[in-house]
Image (cartoon, rainbow, N blue to C red; front, side, top):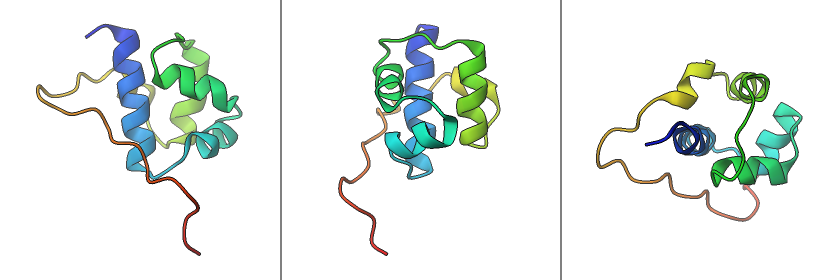
Amino acid sequence: MKAAKRVAWNLRRLRVDRKLSQESLAVDSNVDVSYISRLESGIENPTVGLLEKLAAALNEDVSAFLLIPPKGDKKPAPLKSGRRPK
C-alpha cells in the first residue's frame, strides 16, 4: 500500500474510532472540511505540518498515519449520519 493511501486509511480509521465527523475534525484542526474529505479519499497529499495539526486534533502521534493496516482489515465504516442524541 502506497504512503498516500495509508495516510488516507489511517486518518479515516482514527477519526471514526473517535466518533468524529469530518466537520468536527476540520474545526478541531483548523482545516477546511472539503480538504479532510479529499485527504480521506487519497486525492490530496498532506504536508508534514498538516499531519501534525491532524494528529494533535486526534490526540495521536504523526506516526499513526503511516501504520500499515493488518492484512484483511476492512475499510473503516462511515459514521452513522444525523445528529448525535443529547
